[in-house]
Image (tube, rainbow, N blue to C red; front, top):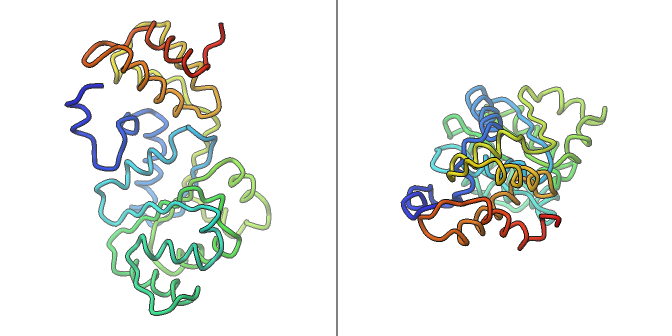
Length: 246
């Protein structure tokens, strides 16, 4: 992890989010297809598999791609629409749901090949989901929902058949792939088998690749500027995080 690598990263994107892992490629293929054909997509999985990282990377520097992060406070209909409206640069003359929804539609009509990446979508209320679906039905816009496994389970029910039947592109991620860890290790110059095995074990813990990135950050500091990360650095970093059992 050198200064010249850091200087090349896009603004607002962390170095850990720049790796072309197989999982990241799969997720971004969903983004590309949904944007190109104005389709609905769904990306679900455990925390730390790379959903948000891929969304941040895809949105960085791409015109018409809007990353919208939901939360409990933005779950109800009006706060959700207001947040979407702010992100897509819609200007509403009112503060109600209809005013915001109309403003969002108008803004998206004027955007070539728009794509909404709605992260943490499991927080959305039922009314918010229905209104977003209505916007999709009226406006030629790609939308990808990203969320945890609860979101996938919720939308598999008959209650959401009208929505789930519209998902043309889906990715379900239950855990990081060994190939993801291999790609990251290759990117930072780790070739030895032992540290790769340790990092793969770490990736199976809650937090997934997020743990791997944090461990590598510590290991890089232990190795020193411009020095290769070795097995002992990874082990020490894991011990400092209490991820490695004696």
